[in-house]
Amino acid sequence: MSNKTWNSEKVLSFAAMFISVMTLVVLVVQTRLMQAQQRLSVLPYLQISNYGSYTQNYKLMVLNNGIGPAFIESVTVRYQGKEYNKDLYTFLAEHFPETDSIPQFFHTNIGKGMLIPPGEKIAHLQIDNSVAGGEKLTRLLRRLGEEGLVFELVYSSVYKEKWRLRFGDEAAVKIK
Image (cartoon, rainbow, N blue to C red; front, side):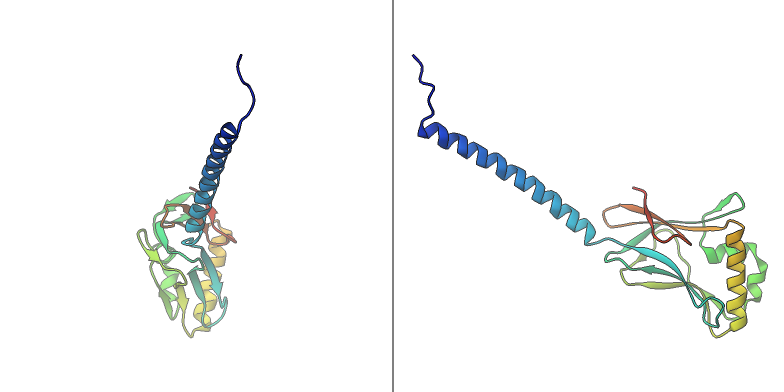
């Protein structure tokens, strides 16, 4: 005759196994939460913004409003069905000679491999103390935008997550 009753040893053994399995589940969940927190603690957040359109101090800024560095993977301009692997200033200088006549026109190049630290603000295109320059550049950018010009940055975090940001978009789109 076999004894099918639960004795204290069986109950303690089952309780110990149950507690071990629950501890493992808690550990897995906690590890996932910590990994997510680590990724968020180095999240870059790039934005492209206009400041002072039609004024004497116009700026097209690239800002990292995140809490981690942004690694630039690619810089692209698309215009009239063609793709150019250049920043916006280089594209304008090579294809639109009227940019030479814009007074007080300055720039900062943006390229593949560049690191934009958190809190950094880069004046990609800039007009200093020239109302005529601000008006000319703003009109040119507006016209090109209406003709379908797209300025795009692809950047990644330290964890190799990638985003695509296009001038005119409200926010970057995660692509990988």
